[in-house]
Image 1: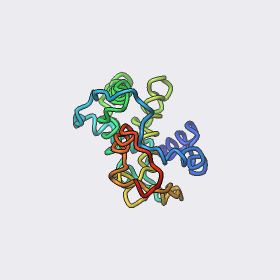
Image 2: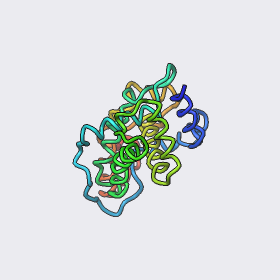
Image 3: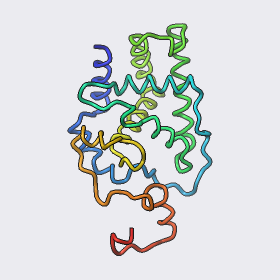
Image 4: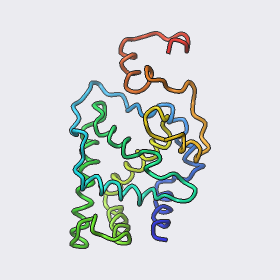
Length: 208
């Protein structure tokens, strides 16, 4: 019951339900996962491998804010952790944003030690939920959890070409029709940005 309550809390707090989600983000799916324009490539602060303990904290947190239900896909099916890893290694993403996401995992664990004198992983599910509710009342916690939700929803909307949204399960759940043309390897992110730098003039979709 607490997991369902927490899911409903997030959906209400961040104004997400299936209808409003499609209305608000359906068009955005055409652009994902292309980040906001950046002036140049930056060095990622992340080497692509989270310590095992942080991987577990992230995994359990994602399962609490987007818990599996009978009617919805789970985080494994949409491969959201793979998408988050791509986000953390993308040189076009602001390194400060990447650092914040990684630090949030550590801050959650430190918060659990302060409140329960235990690691977050040693808490039972009820205590973990209380910890999530607690950090929601902090500025960093709300921003961090919101970012995790955003990345989860991106994984729901992205084309399976990006190794997320397995078998289009997110589209099926949301009754979403993807935009056309569907991405192909040569026009997928980030390759399409390299073509943009070549200042190609596209006069026909067959050129893509």
